[in-house]
Image (cartoon, rainbow, N blue to C red; front, side, top):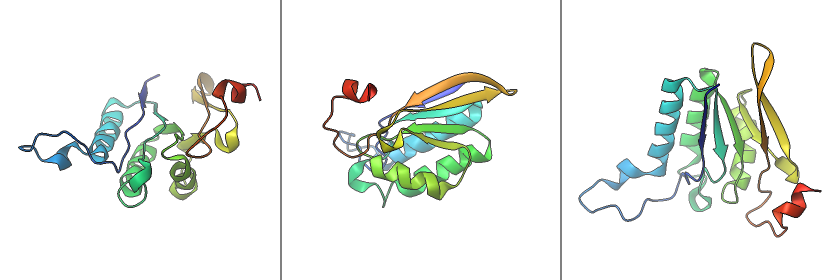
Amino acid sequence: MKLLCTADIHIGRRSTKIPADLDGRRFSSAIAWNAIVDFALRARVDALLLAGDIVDHGNRYFEAYGPLEAGLKRLAAEKIHTVAVAGNHDHDVLFRLESYVGTEFFHLLGQNNRWETFTLQRDEMDIVRIVGWSFPSARFPTNLRVALHS
């Protein structure tokens, strides 16, 4: 079983501290997302795990939604599962995206402030169980340890 894990890509955020002699667009988070998808396809991973803040809050629809959706559809076309939890920056984007992408290969865990699981199978056998919880909003005032036991 091959898993590729990533987090905090912040698609939509501009890269900073790039030397003036370099083209900053080559180092954007959207380019990084496309490189992650390309790698997942080349490596033939079984699943791409996204641990939140894939999209940046400040520019989440204008710049981020299109590249994210396109990448998820490319992965689904090759039957690669994407299992995600929403972070505090993309709590609202990923929930909308789940219904819009409309694929059986995108799994958003932990909606409605509840822990959820997704099990990857091979030859009808359970191989890996992924457990996740998503931020329900940009701020979560409860201690996560308390939330674990509720």
